[in-house]
Length: 417
Image 1 (tube, one colour):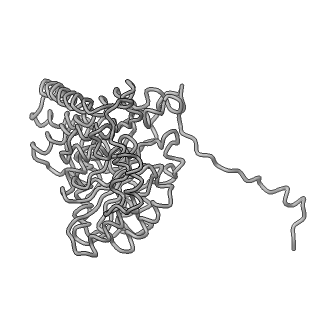
Image 2 (cartoon, helix red, strand yellow; image 1 turned 90 degrees about the vertical axis):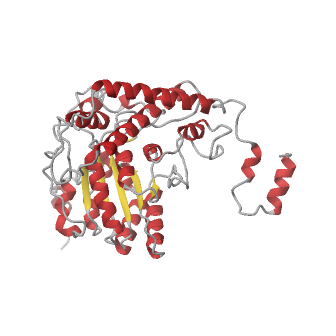
Image 3 (cartoon, helix red, strand yellow; image 1 turned 90 degrees about the horizontal axis):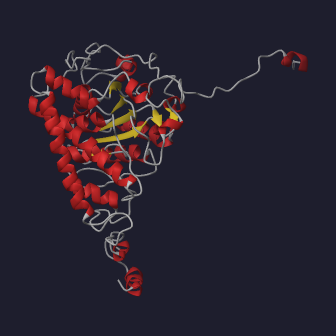
């Protein structure tokens, strides 16, 4: 029997939850709710572990380095000194490069730039764990992949300046690099697309009987895109040899990670529902990021399928040069982040091993600064924004068709180029 109107009035009114960050501008930073596992406490399963049997791993936080720079636990990769020092240098070069390009944008030499300050360990440690031939499908904060693989800083800068030496001939927004030679797939402004592309590439690699795997990166906000779920479905069903990385840096521009569901469950937990391992790692711990990536890579190379990795980190700077983070979060929140700074933590680890010192670190900083300055000087000799040293107009007709059709040739002739 249908209930009467008076009965319906006695029901509780429905309400819609709108996620809100815990702090806003003017509030004191508070990360007391962040569950930080003790370094070395999380077990390391075998690479053949079944997702449902290690589902709890998606809620733990894999860490190796403690606050004193000491490494412990089953995830300690026990890297040699050369690898540690190389990783530290690459992270420092990435930060110095970011700082120079940020200043260049503020000086009007380019239109746009995005820094990865505080997230350098993600790209640099993962590059070290991957093979040089593996294919990377990055987002716009993994410039460290190129630096770690030896891509010339001058070429990176020329792409940012869109000058006459720009490898992409001015066709891409600054920071949207691309290099087939260095296994760096073209960055897209349509966020999330690289997840599906990476899975497709990995499927093709497996189908051909190749031995190369793929790795891809998106931010926490992009997990709300359909591409994320499409990619996980295909990766899981076909056991694609791919590493799916979610860089949870807490903010998708001005939307905090809770808007993508990060408050109710971890992003790593989404992998379990698709039948793939989901791991959470301290994204500011170089050793932990390396170890987790190596685990996932070994799994992929053994035909055991994909792994979803959530890198728990913090975006220390604005989303881009078009963003002012002080408008939506406490001004000093980055300094309060409980997982610290990746460069400082690896430095302290080397000091704890008695293989580094503050003086050596300062000396390396100066050396890197001069290296980056010299690269910038050379890059700017080929032109900057608004100058006359731009890619030739005739290049707009190139790289579209393998063989230029007659109507394109005619258009170029009509332009006189």
